[in-house]
Length: 320
Image (tube, rainbow, N blue to C red; front, side):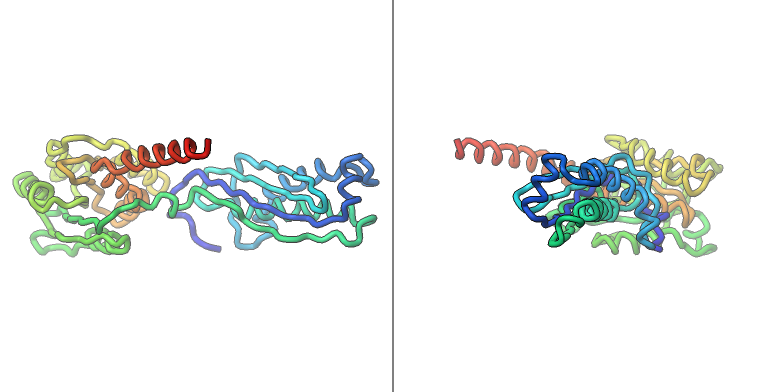
C-alpha cells in the first residue's frame, strides 16, 4: 500500500462511465416497469453508492477514503444503458477507483436483474472520464526556469561546528522541481548578516524564491523572522498558516514555529524551521504550489483569464 502520509489534502473529484449493452426489448421493459425483480435503476444506484464507500474492501491497495458525495446517473438508449458515477472528497489521494468501482457495480447489478430475459446482455467499456484535484492540476505554468536562493541560518553551521542537513534537503527538493538554485549559503543568527544576504538576492540577483531554514523558534538566537519580516513589501500570511497547520498534524511542536513568508520586489521569501522534519513538512505544503505566485506577480495569470474569457466570447459570437 502506498504511503500517502506526507501528501497534502485537496478536493478531489472523479467521473466514471460504464456501458451495459442490452436488447432493445430490455430497455422497454425497464421503462414500462416490467422487470420481474423490480426497477433495476434505483437498486443499481444504491449498489453503486455502497460500492464506492467500500472500494478499499474490494481493491487491496486502495486507501480508505471519507467520501463526501457519490452521484449516479443513468441514460437509457436504444440498445444500451450508460451509467455515470461522480465521486467527491477532500482527501490525500484521488477518488478514481471509487468512481470506477461504483460504475462497475451499478452495471453488474442491472446485469443481474435483466439476465433472466436478456441472454445477450453484455457489460461493455468501463472508463474514467475525468478526474481533478491531483498535484498535476496545480502545477504552475512557468515560461522559464525559476531561480532560487537557499540560506541556512545557524551560528554553529556557519562556524563549521555543525553539519547542515535541512539546507541540503531544501536544495535537493528545489532541484527536483526543476528550480535553478543560484545561491546556497550558511549565515549566522545575526541580523547584520541576514539582512544584506536577503537584499542581495532579491534586489540584485532578482531570484524568484528565497528559502531560509533555521532561526524561526523562540530561542534567544532565533532572529530570522525578526530580521526578514521588515524586508517584506507584502506579507503572505496564508503560506505560513498552511505550513504550521500541516506541520501540526505531524508534530505538536509545529505551533511554536514563527515561520513567515512575504514578497520583496519580485521575490518570494519563505522562512522555514531548522529541523529536518519541519523542513520536509513545509516543502510538502509549498511545492510546487508556491511557484504559482511567480506568474501572479507578473500579472500573467490574470492576463490568461482575460484572454480565455475574450476568446470564449469571440467564439460564441462567431457561432451566432
